[in-house]
Image 1 (cartoon, rainbow, N blue to C red):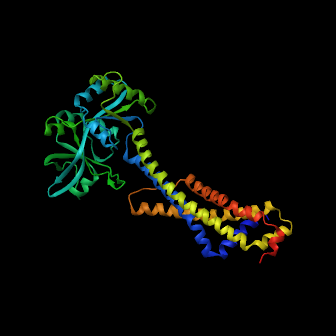
Image 2: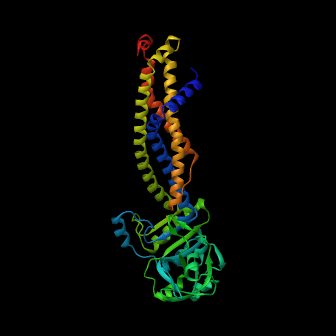
Image 3: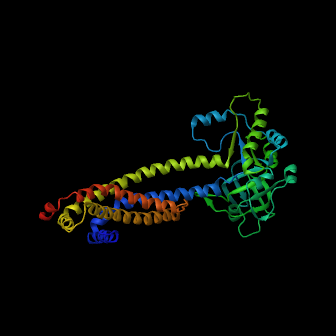
Length: 407
């Protein structure tokens, strides 16, 4: 029996016993679909996070009192004891860092912005120096960014995101209009390009103020600043990070061997943490999907054993006509592989559709990878080969005389 004939027999057997085939394939379909869906969602999230959430370039890094993401309560309590980063620290880094291409400082928070009777809550405050707009690559569709003159004069001006335009100043040209943050008026000088949302959170609900304007209204900056710097290139970022680290350690008189009392974060550190989190989720889901594949493999083994019993006379007849044990073994392995591969193909289709459905119904993005599709099919094929080996070897060992006597 050649390969094509064995595949045809397996396919006809699936078609002849439709209900049994569906029940046989369901475990493999669920397992492969789960793997494809999870891989697609995680890949989509990784791409989305890399391009739209953690927007630091490969040559940009930040210096802050605490890390942006803290996953441990003990670490949080320890970080709160650190000294805050001051405007003097920013000026020192700006003056002493020779390999820094650009340096900016910022402070953030959440507040309510109003215009007339309209208001928008939970707006992301960005009080920063003019360099930050380029460091974070903020594009405008109208007006201009904050300038050094605005910073020096503590000008009551602001740049706003698209959400503020739509909710506070609908139907009018926002440039030159006045909005109020914490009831403090400022003149709109620029409007940001619409960016949409990231994982369900709007990227357009923000207001940018000169750092000096924020400081003027609140006196001294009691909150810790964040210093953001750009190295000469992505390949030299570590040298620049080390230089800034030495400047900060020198200002804080930290002894050799003592830990930093500040945090330095690059885009790689953000993405590494995210990938650790998503990777853990991935492996947990794969473990759960493996259970489905195991159940599916056991069902395939059971069905193949039933098939061997049903076709005992056929096996005996084939052996009597000259078929070797290897031919019988190959026939049943091809049949079990065909069954599982068909289930894998259905699982891939279901997994892709499931990932797309999740993306439509939720803010989670998805990105189907070719390697995950190929991997899913290979896993399904492996399940069929592994769990079909015992039934196939049992069929190959049948004595043709005994098999022909079978009723």
